[in-house]
Every structure is written in structure tokens, then in C-alpha cells.
Image (cartoon, rainbow, N blue to C red; front, top):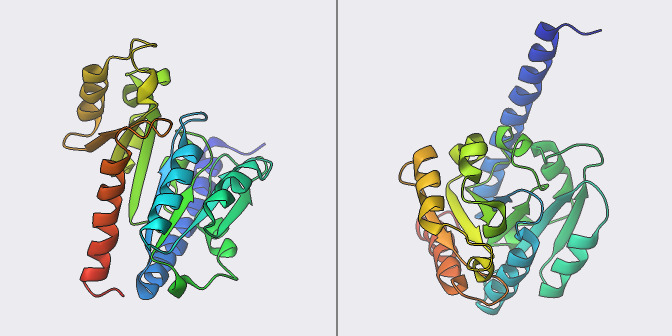
Length: 228
């Protein structure tokens, strides 16, 4: 049986190797001029629905987008996202509860990054494991839905601390579930002071335009500084 010390050493080595590979991926993305956005959340927060709407709208605005989608099993999410007509690949992780840099790298083998402006990486539904794994992304977005409660950031502070932006989803249900919006903002700011927070409903479209403008400004800023 492995000792606790040995388990810690193995974990540290795994994370070190992931960080090295993520650094290499980031350089590769920068060389190709691709802006990479990762999405993390607990299961059922609405990542896939929001991503489908996002891919469709960005394509309509002539942004060249693609997506990698992580899940424990099935290719259902990739099939849904394919309706956006953007290139999509599913990464089946099996028993692994997160994506890592190696999975991302292997999934890109037959894609030309130079044909893309933006790549989305939808992580496995989990608010614990993904927080430790850098995927070479430029922007990490953490989603929380109104059905999960306003104290989610207090229960999972690490994922909010490693994310750049928080998005509160399913706002169309906020009244029905008696969601405390000011309380949610307070929880986020207590964990990550100054964090950008957006709120939207992918179902009704409320807040979606502001979310897309937020993304487009960051994608365009990468182009403006000469990455592409």
C-alpha cells in the first residue's frame, strides 16, 4: 500500500508534467493566434447549452471557432454542439474527472490551429479536479446556475480563485427558485475580490449579447496586439 508521502509525490509530479505541457500548448496557441477559453462548472450548470449558442453566434459574426468537449462517457455533447456547424471533438475521459493538457494536445493532432480564431474547451462537470490542471487557456470561465444556490463559491473557492470570470446561468429560473442574486455576488467577491461576474439565460437569450461582447473584445484584443 502506498504511503501518504508517496501519493503526494506522485501527485506533485503529475501536476508538474501537466504544467510543462500546458506551457508548451500556450506557446503553440499563441504562435497560431488562437484565443483559448475553457469552461468549468458542476454538472447541469448549462455549459453545453451556452456553448452551443456561443459557437453559433460567433460563427455568424465571422469568428472562426471550434470546441473540445470533455465527458466521462458518451459523445452526446459533441453531437449537440455539432449543430452549431463549428468543428467539435469529444474527449472521453473514462474514470478521470477532469481534462488535462495531454488530452487537449492529443485531440489537436489533426486540426490546423492557424484556421481558428478561438478554441473553446468544455471541461468535465466538476468543481474540484479541474482547478488544478492548466490547459494552456487564455481565459477560464466558471459557471454556476441559480439552481445550485448562491453559496457555491464559498463551498468551492479554489475553482473560483483559478478562474478569470464567473457566469451565473439559468437566470430565467431565478425567481422560481428564490435565488439571492446579491448574495451570490457577495459570495463570489468574498472568494475572489474584483472578479468579473456576468449573468444570463441561454434559454431566453437574456444577457447573452453582453456575454458575447465580452468574449469578442478579448478575442479581438489578441489579434490587435499582433498575435495573428
